[in-house]
Length: 212
Image: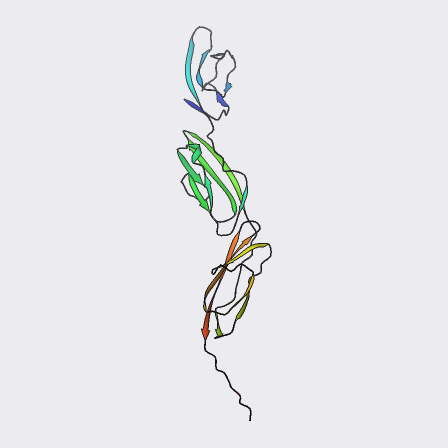
C-alpha cells in the first residue's frame, strides 16, 4: 500500500518492464501518477496471451490544521505560547527539541514544529522578534540621614506609565522614609521593566555652634 500526504503525487510502476500495460485508470503507459485515494491495478503482458495483474491501495492523508500564527514580537522575560495541538497529530517535534503539542518560548528566533500524522509529516514555522525596551537601574541601595530626603529619577524613553510600590505615579520623586521601593515602568509597546532600591535611615551627627 502507498500513502499520499496531502495530495502529493505518487508514481506507480511495475518492478520490471513489459510489452503492454493496462491500468485501471485506462492508461497504457509503463507508469502513472496518482494523488487520490483508491485501489489501482495494473495488467501487463509480453505476448498478449499470458497476463499478470497486481493491485495497490493508495491512501490520501489530508494536511492537519497546523498554524503557529503570523510572525510576531515579544517583550523581554514574557513567555509566548506556541501551539500545534489543533493538528491532532500522532507526534510533535519542535526546533527546541521539545515533543509536546504546546511550548512556551522566552527568546527571539525562528521556531518550527514538525508533526507526524500516520506516515506523513507536516510542518510550520514562526519568526519571533524582540520588542525594544530599556532596562531600569535606580542605583545601589543607600542610606539617608534622618530628616533628609533622596531624589530618585526613573525616566525612560517611550515610557507610558510609572507605578511605584507605594502607588506613587511619576518618573521622579523624593524619598524621605526608609524601605524597599520599586517602580514598574510600562512602555508604549506594552513591554514592562522594573527597578528596585532599598533606602535605609541613619542618625547623622549634628554640630551645634553657639554664638559667643
